[in-house]
Length: 76
Image 1: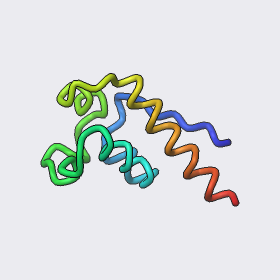
Image 2: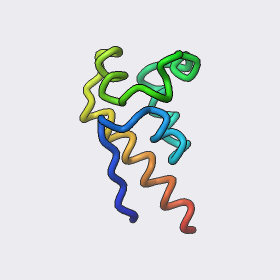
Image 3: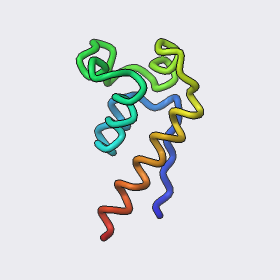
Image 4: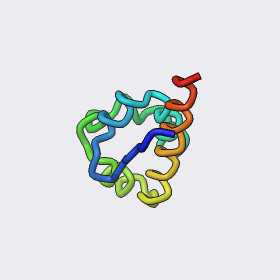
């Protein structure tokens, strides 16, 4: 499995552009309106979590899991 390092300092856009499957995690926790928010894409993940009262460590772990599954599927 590739070494995926997602952190709360990364922007929402960085993560969803590199690993589109992570959009499911954003939708699960923040709803579908997340992607039409003017802040989406440029704000750090940690700020998005703060705004939505979501634990950043748990959220980053879920993003990482989704990205790892995506990377694994690419190698098959």
